[in-house]
Amino acid sequence: MSPAPPVHVSPGAAHLSPEVLRLLDRWLPEQRWYPVPAEGVTHQPWLTVTFGGVADVVVALLRLAGPGLAAGDESLVIQVPLVLTPTAEPEADTAETEAAGLIGTVTTASGTVTVHDGGVHPAAWHAYFTAALPGTCEPEDCAELAGARRISGEQSNTSVVLPALPHSTGRGGMLKILRTVALGPHPDVVIPAALTQAGWDGVPRYLGSVELPADGPGAPGAPGAAGEAPARAHLAVLSELVHEATDGFELACAYAARDEDFGERALELGAVVAHLHTALRETLGPGPALEPAGFMGVLRRRAAEAFADVPALAPHRAGVTALYDSLSARLSAVVDGGGVVALQAIHGDLHLGQALWSPDGWKVLDFEGEPQRPVSERTAPDLPLRDVAGLLRSLDYAAAVGHATDPQWVSHAQISFLEGYRQASGEDHATPLAAEEVATSGTVLDVGTAELLLRALTVDKALYEVVYEFRHRPAWMHIPLAAVERVLST
Image (cartoon, rainbow, N blue to C red):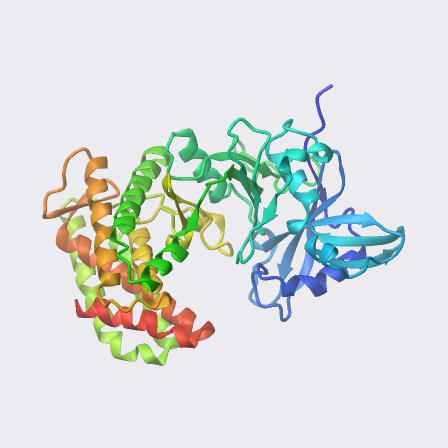
């Protein structure tokens, strides 16, 4: 007899009483990873997930409904792993229960139940782990996972360090529970898996994932039109632990605080990002050609929205318009002359916090993009220089947050990063780059067009940052605002 499947899916709120759901209604909006403002939002049970052989772990997949939120298959869905244990009486509010993520105790028709947040509870970690690597060990007998701990401070997901794994790597693992779930192959599973299979070591090695079954009772999607595969949805991803790793943004801030030259580390990172773009292009294939009118239309729309939102941007409207006009003319000339600017898979949300530095070098992680956007948008081919622009902006933030007093600290770090990227791009294209050419996504652009493109993408990112800081951290708005002025003046 074949073993029972590790993941079972039931429709709606199976295994979850109304009392538990009401408890979650109060608790969820207080969580850091909760993706939207809570006012007017309701939680509608979509699917319930259980794990074979694990009685107490139940995962609620809840659709968020409310003003401005999509409905149906486009709904924003959050994943809420729970550990439900029958109890004779409510647990005391002790440090031990807080550490295990106590949400509360409720009385249901079948008895009193204590509810814990599975994101911080070892029983749920074991369930996810054994589902990601079936047959490795039984959930109730996974002593090798002793010492596991949750990473604090995460914004969008819940990650757990597993110091030792009953697995051939012997290096430990990182379990990421995806708090926002979307139909479709999740980029933070698909891309690391593809890069690992291709042998590229610039990502933490992919080990496995937890995926909803595509068919059977309660499955998230039935087969579509003839020949189409059923919908997929991922819940968690398991990767190899990067030992002695430091968050890239924290590392850069520490260098900035000491006014210590970050050039060598930035040069290395630039090379890794260039190799990443080559590996993505070779592994996932090239994308379509950039269409200048549509591309520029998106840039202009986003700029118009930023100017409408932030009055302080008004003095820069003419400069942004002139920059975009120049780029539009350049791109049109390339295309009209028979050139092609090819798009490809990129990271899409690359900044220093998405990279880890260790004695083994830089590793790039977190390929999920913006969790609230549909998977199709997050995985759409784009320009590699968008990732480059993101890291240039991140180095600027590191200088500001780290309070670098050397006025050359950030410019030297940015130049070093660009030089590392340029050199590695030349290596990956098999021929050294001439001084007048810049390779991007397999297309050689003249240096003037490439520089304009990078400036425009950097301004686009900085305008987004100005709006974000204006709304959430006004005291920081000067950081991206100064960047807009600086880029326009070059």
